Length: 122
Length: 110
Image (cartoon, rainbow over all chains, first blue to last red; front, side, top):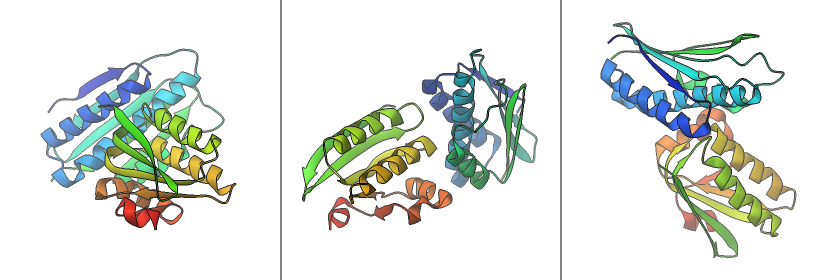
């Protein structure tokens, strides 16, 4: 499956759309059915974090969600372009994300933040 | 999907029945209901999540905030969860040790 990209406005009511699309994409790629809920929750948390970060920034640019099937893994990258902030809006979100995604990285700098998540295909 | 919230008195406590999804968009509505109950002097609360299909960290944050507020008045907050999908969110954040989880409203009211 080629890379799919979803752009959502930085609005809280758009987060549900992103997690549902990620769940559907994960299922389509072959992620274990028992893990699909975890994909939805982790991607939802990442998107919610990005939306809140973007809302704290004056430039309300879209949140970008990229999904990719690499034949062995399902990768999701959630990006915002809100500059670095003194504190993360939700520490619990990061705790949940890192617990649910077998592989996870969080990068933040003055240009924005990206959370990369990876699940193996069954 | 929206959130549904109904509050009722039972066994000397207030039970808040929640349905649907509790996420970054809908959690403020739950916070509003719980906050109103606390401000009215109701400190013994049960939140029933049996009909909740999705719960994220924003929802957890509302529950933690409410727990702190009722504890300031020697009150309590109990939560009913009936699915592993919802219980898991408490477990992976460690909040299952801070918030009393029950299988049904009856045991939460005991």
